[in-house]
Length: 393
Image (cartoon, rainbow, N blue to C red):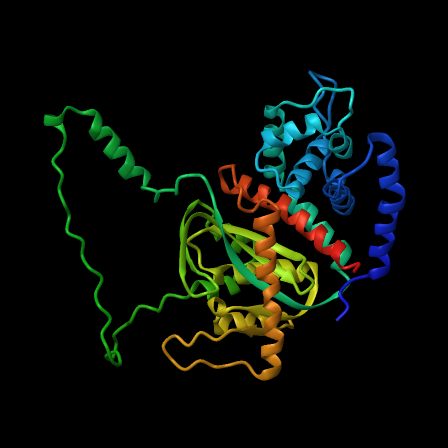
């Protein structure tokens, strides 16, 4: 199935190859293949169109945010792990410095300036906005055959968040700790009354039974997208997930949920706590992806096996292909035609692997879900542009 516009891709490729690259080579000298890849990525992403800083003439004029945004995209493409390493590379590499837009006769911004700019990009959701525009421009009017949904572990260098204590209990404990030991109130343990066990069988006449608690997926189907995104936990904690070989892996950090087209381009992304189950991100991701592209099949593994998710996928006009989870019962296998289509789901695993190995998904040096998502989105932008460039072949 043709999901791209080859003539537009080749047109942009020829413009960069035969017009932009020769001009840059004349200014800064020969370019390495990596630097040429940075040029192509920046030309596809066009992140400078989404960065605007208004200066009213009071105080020192800020550095151009477009140059800093280009530098962060180049950092993901070149595989640089830290901002300090990026600044050192810009200091010694005149070609990269010119590609990102920094004038050669001016001093580079300091590390603090890079950090402040990154905070602004993270708070404003720059990566998410640029990625949405990129997908709608190149794949918005195309028909996507298969949309592969999966979650992957994101390790972070921060402490897992603790469970919140009610403010009244925390204040009482803090006030008691200020008193002398002999004047502290005695600790009284109030026995908790256990909830009455639900009786088996039919209820008696006139007996009211409490209603069964609705599942989170059913509750999501009655909510708006904004309500679902608000309820998704994003704090750093510990998670456990089975890998492709069936072994359990545990990590500390977050979990990235991706919708990937069969051409290998990420369509939508969500970040959650590491402990959140993959199925709770299925409905929000499907709504975000449905707003950007049109697809036919939704491919998910056994973690998403749910009748509610199948009904939701069908309500969007899609065909759900979800691996059956027997749950101690008999496994329902795919038909031969469905099994062939389900093999396309390996595109999700390849995207996760490339994001971690090539575009900084394993080198998280920032803390907080907002900054972690911003770091990952620069890598997703680079991955999306690279996959779009591969389609010319």
